[in-house]
Structures are given as C-alpha cells and as structure tokens.
Image 1 (cartoon, rainbow, N blue to C red):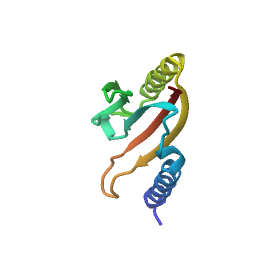
Image 2 (image 1 turned 90 degrees about the vertical axis):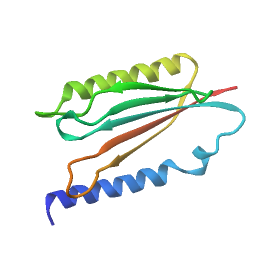
Image 3 (image 1 turned 120 degrees about the vertical axis):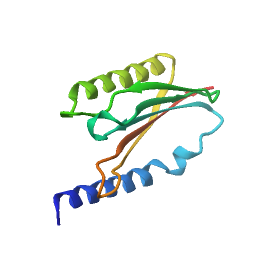
Image 4 (image 1 turned 30 degrees about the vertical axis):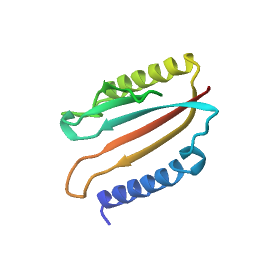
Length: 133
C-alpha cells in the first residue's frame, strides 16, 4: 500500500467522522431561544497557490461576507506565513463575534482530498455561534 493511499484513506475516515459528528440533531435544529450565526473557513491546498481560500460569514439576516484568506501552499510548498495570516484573520473574526455577545457553540471541520490522480483539496471549518434573543 503506497503512502498516498494511506493518506487518502486517513483523510476519507476523517471526513466521515467529521460529517457524522458535525450533523448531530442537537446542532442541526436550533431553537427559538437563540439567534444563530455561522462562519465558514475554506482553505485551499492546491499546489502553487492557485486555489481560492475564503472566510464566509453569514449573519442572522442571511447577508454573506467573503473575506480573502491565503492558500496553504505557494510554489515552494507549505507557506507557514499564509497559515499564520489565516489563523490571525479567523481569530480576529471569532474575537469580534464574541465581543458582540456571541458564544462559540460548535466547531466542525473536514477535509476534501480530491482524487488519487490530482493534487487538490480543501480544509473546511464551520464555526457556529449563538446568543440569547
């Protein structure tokens, strides 16, 4: 079994676990006691930095804001400066929401690894916030 197949298998198991734990009914059915707010980070792992990475912020009114994030990979491989910048943007947005009275209620992450023949994929992290109405 090749190293690539092992990694692909591991990522597939991780995605399945993330899907199963991320869609429990207690999280999927918000009640009338709270207002809900969701933010999603989509971070590309396409080689050469050709992918699109975004932080999608969806407020209680359904208004969507896209905030540009950097891709994990540049032409030289993993770009840790980009990872650090993405972490800073996400942390600042989480801090802004918590300062506005939102509670970080749930975080769900997953990976899409693409096919065996292509070097492609994304990391996705969903942040669900709530606050009493």
